[in-house]
Image (cartoon, rainbow, N blue to C red):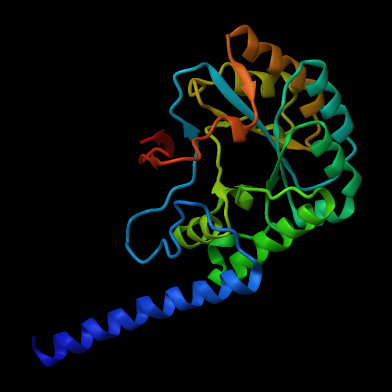
Amino acid sequence: MEPIEKEQTNASLFVKIGIIVLSTIMIIGFGIRILPDAITVSNISSKRDLPIYHVNCEEKKVALSFDTGWGNDDTQIILDILAKNDVKATFFMTGEWINKYPDDVKSIAEAGHDLGNHSENHKQMSQLSPEECVKEIMIAHNRVQELTGIDMNLFRPPYGDYNNTLVGMARDCGYYTIQWDIDSLDWKDYGPESIVNKTVNNKKLGNGSIILMHNGAKFTPEALESVILGLKDKGYEIVPISMLIYTGEYTIDHTGRQLAK
């Protein structure tokens, strides 16, 4: 081997070792939980590391999810509607929301819904360092654990913004990164009919779809029951994301569809 090639090989090796050491330090420092099939450093290669947008599912199942980033006036209304229709959903919560409304966090958990992590400060996390990503995830995680005893494992990036670093660090923290393939656009305040149409009549709706809604959007409570009934009329069973995704061996195709191996 030529001296220059040998130096480049050594340099590359030292860079990889350095990244792994850094990840190990963060794992120890922040109490990160490793999934059985976790990749400690997922962004060494140039391959794109995708979140789960939807699930390859033979059964007619879909998941309702709510991002909670502001207010809690509608939380109990949403919980009542879900209970009335015997539906379990997934709530992705920011650390600030968790801190402001601890009783609502407990109510969501006690009702049997998924508790999901939406970061501590709702930043654009693709712009953050690996260390900052871990902090954003684990501070919110620890808040919920202290309140409920639950170890969350579902993470939704703020603004749907992600890169390989974020998805990899979330995995190293014990999380599945979750996006959506059906956007209700409830945050645009177009009205309840628009929300229902954007979900129930969406051309992308299918087995394994993940639907995005927001706790705090103006018309969400008014539209929610019609969304639920519309989905049920089409033969869909509505389940929390934890009951939709594969947690064993899986792959994710270029569209973000999760497939069991």
